[in-house]
Image 1 (tube, rainbow, N blue to C red):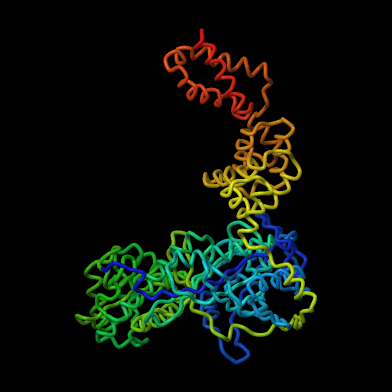
Image 2 (image 1 turned 30 degrees about the vertical axis):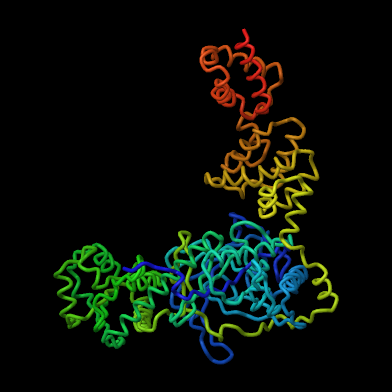
Length: 633
């Protein structure tokens, strides 16, 4: 196993940014993009692949069809209508989304087309009820400047977001319609050479430009990066979907570069061998031969009436387990491939005997398949409805192994790896939208877009810093947070210190999220109410964290409920002095021994009793005054 050095692989990365637009309505209807966990209706569909206008099937659509999934959709009338259900034609294109897409295109100096043609992009994984996604090419060309370098823009599109995946339950895949149809802008950049950290900087710069418009949504899921990755001698470009965070982006680019270069090394080793490929003639059924196999996995498969098949691969010994870099193996690639058919995995000769499969079982397979010294084999158990599709994919993948990296779409994982998702789509997946006529842009629209190009990020940041008296770090945090608009409203509505407001919105809520609490439960009106109570002296600064924790922890829905549940009440000056006096009397020995150093532990005792009931600064001053009295006497 050799050391992976990313500078040696000829890494190229092309970014595609998908950003939700904050237009308060969906792209082709008047529904508001409100996410909810409550659904009043549900319906199901079965989507199928159809030929394009050129008479060809899209490979990605055929792959999804082979899974034979039934799609269950959950709907809420607050966030979806007959358009999302595909029971009514799309309405007119939302004007706000159109103008915002033009502003973004103008900001990137991209060449806007005078006439826009809505298209349909075939998608039958269930994420669209129609079996396609509507998309409109807005412009091509242009650039974004990053650290003095100009990164080219390939295209800018305005399109519908997909439905939100709720999960898979066997042959049923579940989606919510809340997000379906929310306007997205897709920006595809030219591929660039560089390290993962440099790719991250490009994504960060583009994200800053989009946020400068103040018309894009914030938070996890509102901006997603798809990454097109290739390495030298790799043979194909791999698209990685679903990267939601910049820290994840850097890890995924590095992993994918290592995976692809590992596949290049596997291909070179195969090219130097006598491997000539395999066909369906190399597939044998061994269901009856393995009836007595003691493996629990095999016995469960037999109980479920699954078929067990073995594939013979000549001159392939050791190739499934060969690992040029840690975690990169052809056996692992094939295991991930079959999982997308709902099959648990495969067994290959480089890892057997194992998993309860014994040497006697292997001897049976070798005899049935006539395995020679340099041959390998692979075992798969699956229902008859799935096993044919899975074996075709396995044969295709093994035959591709000697060519290097196959063109495919992969999914980003939270830990920074990628897993197989589906084959790369072909050109036949896109065709004209028949329900929406071409859209001609007016001269006024184009001029308006040019005049409303947002200020550069650094200028916007400096403006916020000066306007609200924030330090540079806090100004960047609040500008980059989903609470920027709320922050400005609270500052305008109350006289509470702007630095404190920004700190609560950026630090306190984030800290509570890291503790596993749900910030979505904390509504903007409740946040505003908390700062109004603080301004009127009804609660203390310290109370806000306690109140927010109570609501985010699902113990209360409103500020009023949280105040009752946490028993927060402000203590008047007389009562406060009595409590502090009692703490001092009970800890005189501590004060005499530690003198001024007693302040720390005494503050901890006082805050335990008074947290949220009196300002920490006043508690601190009273303790200090009483400690000095005792020491003077």
